[in-house]
Length: 80
Image (cartoon, rainbow, N blue to C red; front, side, top):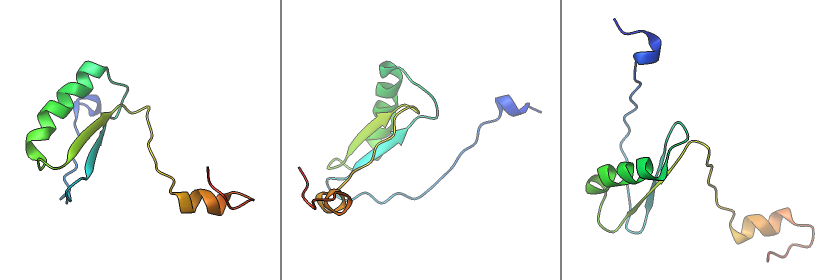
């Protein structure tokens, strides 16, 4: 029996991608550009042609603030 450090956890989820969507693949650890490019190369065949794949390492966190969110957080109510 493998010890805990050798065990791998798999999470399976059904993904729905709409045209123009971007699938973000986040590695659990810091990864080299070459490693991330291999991830993209492996995943792309399973993604619709009208969607993109973005691979990032575990040290990167992405988020989006909409103009409305920015305006609601500023005292003047105007976003750049």
